[in-house]
Length: 152
Image (cartoon, rainbow, N blue to C red):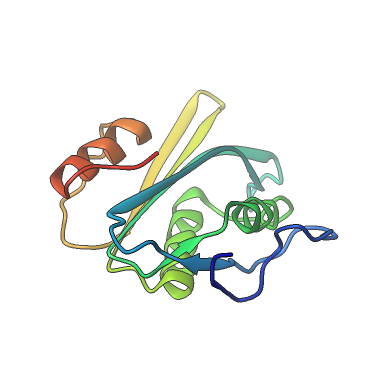
């Protein structure tokens, strides 16, 4: 059984969303992990219309990895929150840093087009320069190659 920090939602009935990330001990030879979800929503703080997002998170140089059920519940906690795409990317990056203590984190949030305008916002804790014109999967793949491979 893996070692968990912050408890674990695995195997437990959880009522509603929660703004906490459960983490577990990373294997010794682990290089990096990419998490991606296209089932993320929040509310536009101006119009109160729903915004839909694809969120990609890559973490490297960490002893702790995010447990996926807690990540799903974490994303659901934004469902009724009024937040701009850029602030959302920044908040996710800060929360992932706090939970994992990772040395390198990239969070890319792509807001699906509404009114003909889509937005891509990247927040990071690292030394790598970002290439904003890449889609999330390609960006994360490119970053992974620069750091010795990637795990999906």
